[in-house]
Image (cartoon, rainbow, N blue to C red):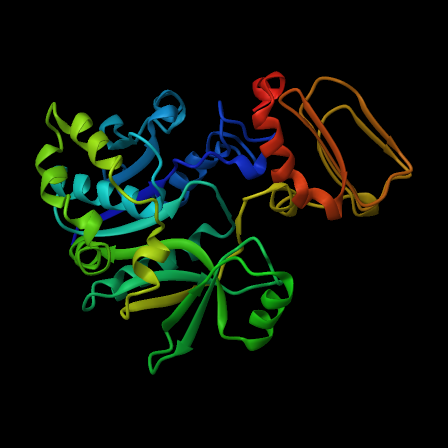
Length: 358
């Protein structure tokens, strides 16, 4: 069976502002390793997928960035452009039909472009195991990550044991919880982090759209017929305006009874916000995380500092603080208050004088 990878790369990365901006969102940034995040994702899977079978879906506003920065071994016709963002259900539906039309039936592994993953060999083992499971019957397969702390920034998967120790049956998906609820999930030993990685046959996921998202599925034939014609862009744009904004989790996976989970035994992190960004970096003396140049930290402890500017940054006598200097923005806040940043960002969007910093 043909094997395809679909990398979702249309996010705006607003929760990681000011590191990630509208002009250059996080998937096009080098936040760790040697490559921008989207190319790190490609490198993790290039040993199990041919380059011509790796597809990337982005939104129209990011097309220039995609063509400029995405690994040049990926055929440019494999970069799928959405006319607008309508969440993961629609982008997966459109990309699946396009892959089926220009390639053929097969099995698709859906990945995110903005995740941090160590031990790529273990990731590859998980994907291979998941593909084998997805080829059985009509299974929709996800990779769950064993929680290491009560994270409030990730979704969770509740699962039950099966007779086969290689996988679990998914009971339900849970949205990002409050801390107390996340702690309950951890203690119960029957929840995993939702990694956002999904594996299924093209036929299986299209049947699921038909069963659970008929208002999207009804456009199947029209989209499929338009693919690789001069009418594709116009037709898809018109259809997108009519489509509801819904995630694949809410639209299908929470309703389906054929969802299976395998456990991913590798270090994983969805770099969704500033706290997650600092978590993937090593701590130095006095439990500080120091990223960038021209930084002097004196009598400073338990503090995270990022300085991307060519200006000297000095701290004296600080404790439990986040300092971020990037893209002409400087943020200094107590660690406990970093979650207030999205509210500040919403206010900034309303002020004309601040919009150039977005």
